[in-house]
Image (cartoon, helix red, strand yellow):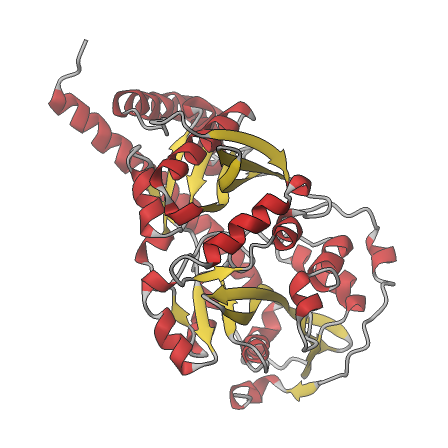
Length: 454
């Protein structure tokens, strides 16, 4: 039986309004929590002890972890620090020793931190050195000097590209003040997503809103009915149109030489800015020690040749239980739409098979997004300042001002590089990690003169 067209439009309108309200409340709450850790100061008039800016060392691990935990951020693991700054392929290949980050010290205590991750990029046959900022957090009395951490990041020498890819709005404003630019792809901030389990998805949203038991039950039923009905009528899920491809699923550790061959082929296509995707770089990027989530690789073959792959990253919100699978990376030969379709269908099947509530896609070039848009995904705004960049070379900056020069996705920067992880080493033991032999570039920065540092 067909529904009346007008009734269907009304149902869709109600559903869209309901989704906007819920997602707006979630974004507001996320911003409030994040601003507790990195927001701009509200009271800088009272005296605080002078602070000292210096390069971070491995022996700062415990102090940085405690600082993050104080302000609701995920504490890292010592194993992940070793992965990021000792086993990083970009560090091994680089000729310049880089800081692992910077800290602010006051009365011999760490009161601020910003991590610095080295990365490798390619633009055509040009190799680029990049750095990504990560995990800015500052105790409230010292947030007036928090900008000195960001300034230290942008003062680094022998860097081609500076990236800020997971910042909240306040941190994004700092990067903009230091002459960063927004990624010239306006659709990057628009997340495409499909709901896999309408009722479980609705329950997770109700838990997020904390409406109480009875209201949550009613809201879950109404929301799941609206989403489920619209999904069925609108056929909102990826569907295969060709059977000429074979898609297999492997672990990150099984990434092999065929990935290397695909990567080299991709570099010979039209010149675009691409993060290094050699087999070694892929294994390092997604091989997070003590990972609390899951990363799996979908490999698309035609006549036994690897013609594309997708990495699906799955994480669970510990507060609501919402399990989200994300297309963390997707690379196909010549951006072939049929290969993209095959991988998206496989990604949907994988996410549904492991019990995820949502499958989402963030970023990627217009050619890939247009393929995914054929299946009527829902859309929402990214709940942060998603992607800022600054090139040291003005000519490169002009080149990158064209959106067609980018292949931007969650593989860039620190968006999927760092995820919540478990440590096998207690904090007390981790704090005894050896400090790397770096010079102390300390600068005394009294709070009242912070604006003069730049």
